Figure 1 (spheres, helix red, strand yellow):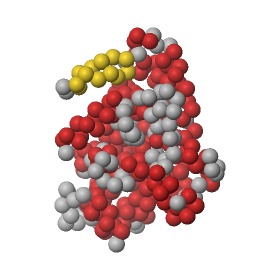
Figure 2: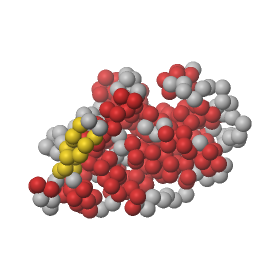
Figure 3: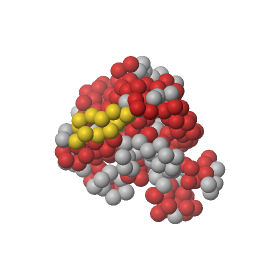
Figure 4: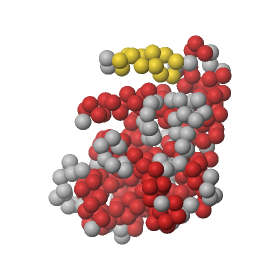
Length: 311
């Protein structure tokens, strides 16, 4: 496990491979702030378990190398669908989308909005059962996917700039910028809301993210233009390896061009994660959250809980 985790961290830093997720720091920060934003009585529950939710915010990333069909839950290639039908006409129901495009096609091009819409019912069921470990595990996982839906490059087949000669842009936007600026970001959100039509809201998040893709790509090019060529990258020691990463000067120039886009998407992620947890609890009938059933051990794999929730 530690070997896989070390490899994943290096990949996130280097921006190589098909990595489609906020960086570890951003995911954990999103979960932390979503916990602190919850209204009572959910605030008491999520604050009590905040360390668990922070620690497990990146579980889906850890699984993507070992669990079949995990990777497709983190993204959606909106540009693929736009070549066939207008994006706002893509079926919001998964079974309808499969009928229209085939399941192989849907899985290949990502299912993040459908995954979120499915999992909110898992979370509702977990609340209704008042089962502590189900609530925590599903909360951690759906929070991860909801946050991923707010990353623009998660909505494009050009997810790492490979089609526009901008290799590495993925980690630059979602990992390197947060690592440098997160302590300066004023991360706060408005009142948590119940979302009566959750599917519509998660699809809005996807469409907003996709609308930002042209700016993400353009502003990276502009940032490079204003950064001297010999000052764009630096070499750093990571364990026993020396790797090439973007320089602080280039990162600052890119963040300046983006005009707080990363901050705003993080805040929207926090808002939507908190809204998701709250909505599931309301859907469940607002169950009381003390003396919950703890019969499922904390180390039960999420796949086992998924199978149980399917029954």
